[in-house]
Image (cartoon, rainbow, N blue to C red; front, side):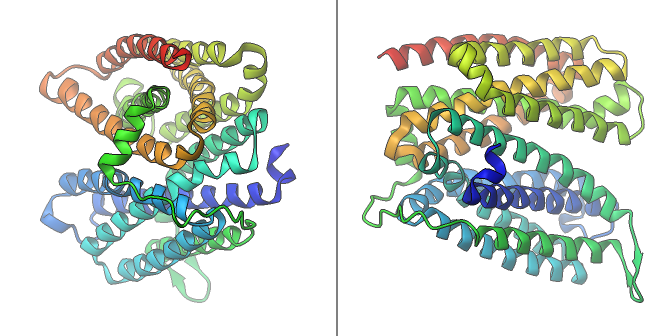
Length: 407
């Protein structure tokens, strides 16, 4: 197994896992605290603040991903990750203080800084893998990273709810806010500790040019194969954002189930992503890129179709499992091919990918607002529209990708 066998990769995986875990604990904690009035609400409107919080975390990926690519190319990857994790420790210490002082506006500012740290970390997170691995091992490494990302989302979401419903008496009573403050600082420190175990690669290029946002996007559009790989990956995030955003309402209104069912369905989805991601290497060896691409696309489509007609929890669980497996099969080979085909431009194309991921997720939110809000349609209708778009997009992107690769 790759995880455990490669010392630096194991430390790297734990570093990125605890970082993503901390992001989700902190973000979901703020949303819950604002919703229940446990924090002073800036602007006096909970709904507005929760939407603002989501936008605040995504915005840095649009603003700072290019800067992250420049840093990744000009600095040793291992040392850069260590410095970014040190910055996370500082941000979380301030966040813990602001939780105790009930400073809602400052906590939102710190959420923006956490998003900034994640945006700067993104390019080095994926561009370091080709420095360690080639071909089949690179597919496995990307599979582990994809698994870690969705496991962190699941556990971070669960942990936020658990921490805010707990209270400990250790001689001194620890309130839910105290537990959250301690947890986010500990997670940051663990991530920093693991980052120190990553051996320096000595791959810095200090004389490398620095690209602006527009130059990064221009480079991506010039590399046609890279562009369609980026768009294909971002489409996965569009579908995922559409489904996971509506999942709480789907569980409550369509299934008439208890809130804990949301966590159960999310767990099945994350487990599916893990199975699909870790199976990608063997599937790629047997079916090659084309076969795995269509298998992943088909499983996502079948899962959405099942979900549209689902009236039972069991069907919903199967549907989200299939979509998770399909998502892992679909995304991992795309990331691997992007890394292999981009050469020295890898960090910049990863930055462009993160920018497009953010754009596609924002577009997903706009589609949801139009279909559910302005048009007054059901969640099933939104999923149906997404399914039709999915079938069109995967065909068009594959044709374009094949043409760019052969050209």
